[in-house]
Image 1 (tube, rainbow, N blue to C red):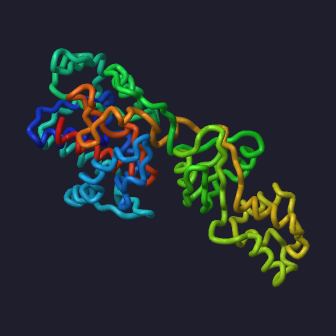
Image 2 (image 1 turned 135 degrees about the horizontal axis):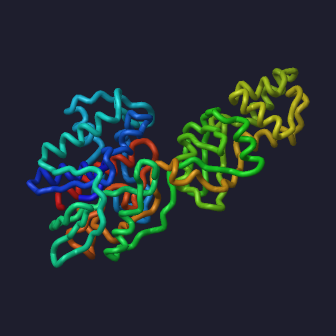
Length: 385
């Protein structure tokens, strides 16, 4: 088994429990770094509302079998049995009360309890098939096995060791690999939009962010590079180069109607004072300056009201790109699910070869769904590999 991240650790322990002799290899000396840094160091280990609708894939049905056979409640039960305290932050997101290291320690304990041999800091030089066996050549030895599980993850966050090893191995065995790109990643902008974002850097606001394929209402964060925050990270997985995104800073109200009401009852009020009751004052001031609107609300023209309404409810933006794999939480695309069995994660063309976790073309929404895919796909493969 190559890759001792979330999916690899889960798969190894399950295979070991079945009495399989398992060797788990990882090129890093630090175990499961992506788990360690996730959730601000507390690991958003699953989501109460995980279901297939929270995942993107060329085959929307592929994830259904694994998610139904090993659910979020199964993993929660394992966490509770280990007496790890946790809490729901929002939208079903579950985090450790203490630290992500607790999840790593739990998975490592399960692996060792199942009799798995775990080797860290081992680089794989070559992989090939010799008659009915898979051969893995490391720097130090040649290992033969009946089954080979690839759990090497995607390209996101290269500083913790992410590589394209899994994709190269898939292609070596003749499997299709889809186009890949960064997902759950901050979006970048140029020119006047970038200057606007820089001026508001550090400001967070509740917003509805949409593109042609989806809408998400969560926090939006202005940064010195562009836009981030949960709503933007979510939409980045759907956004395609050249597409526009729309931002609504006040999704619970109708600004033009509100301004007309205030105009009748508090006409002498300054427009900034009124807008600052609807939006954070910094954002309100920046929007008014950008649209060239000032003075008393009684003096607002219908054209100015329309301009402000559009600025608040329908800010149209064309991102120049994203921050890329350096800050992306996941990789979109990857090993094509058409090459795999959704029941076992085994490849159709090469019996005994399995792919699990992020290396497969299944990407979850932000909020613990991707870890649940790792647990579910790893568990499934562990029943057969």
